[in-house]
Amino acid sequence: MGHKKHHHKRWITVDTLDKIQERRDKKAAINTSRTRAEEVKAHAEYTEEWVEHLKKRLNRPAPLDPLNIEVTFTDLPINVGPLTIEEINMAIRQIKSGKARGPNRNTTGNCGIIN
Image (cartoon, rainbow, N blue to C red; front, side):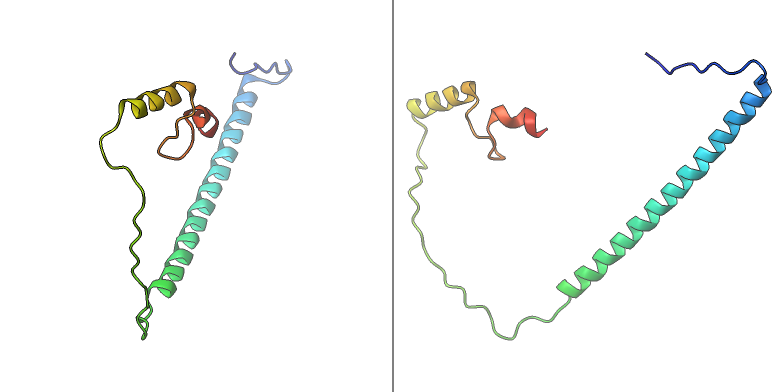
């Protein structure tokens, strides 16, 4: 498609149009440089705030009382044996129908929506 071509008045000379465009370019450059400077400044402030926050949270003495965490053994019913033909066929059917769960716990049919 391209940009729309502007038709200017006949009484405006080409030199005047060039000067107008040059001024527009200078204004855009100034505004862009201001924006970049503000972005850099904001990013520096943001980083400094996080540094202070992490110093407060991480640089503290160890607790005097050790935590009392009880170790419990839970025997979960997980089948760790080799896969059966039935399990493989069921997984293939689920993949084909779009109902199989991926590593991010989403079905394969939802991948297009997420991205």
